[in-house]
Image 1 (cartoon, one colour):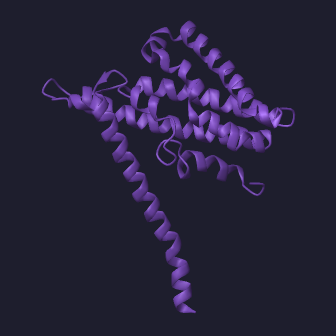
Image 2 (spheres, rainbow, N blue to C red):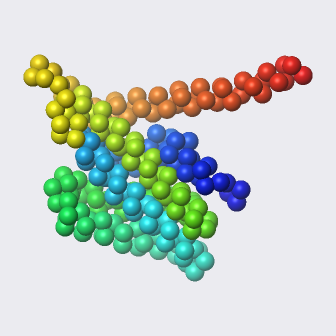
Image 3 (cartoon, rainbow, N blue to C red):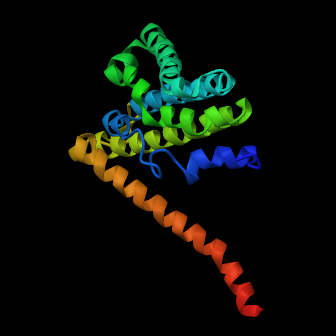
Length: 214
């Protein structure tokens, strides 16, 4: 960990250890609020704020939190930022807040946030914890947004509420239903696995060629 660069930490959350496509964490909101792109983006932004803020605070207090009390303390920190997000959403983004409903308060129990607090922020300096939180949050948001755009386009023929096709467009209603969320996420996980395998093969090929030459 000590030798990791900022870019390595950031890219790990964005792609290599994407919390949804690789670690398969926080799938409840991923499947529940991605029927439209705006809901997906809103949930991703809220989660990223809480993840980044809680990582910073946990890293700051890591030397004073007793080991046996760390999880309750982490939950209190996370719940505090979720409360801030919930109040701001109700005050300034009321329609989006109504659409997301209980999934905003449920960010408290999102295992991505608690997992990063325990596995990374509590063991690393503030700057690393901040980069990790931002990278993981951005990876989470990008996945939700890709899922939301795909489902809205195929299921409604719109994106962010803007109509893309004419009156003859026949939407795939299943895409805005729960089975559509599972199917789309499954394909996305499969595509990421194929890309990772291809990247690994490209990385291994030069080394294998050198061994054969030797």
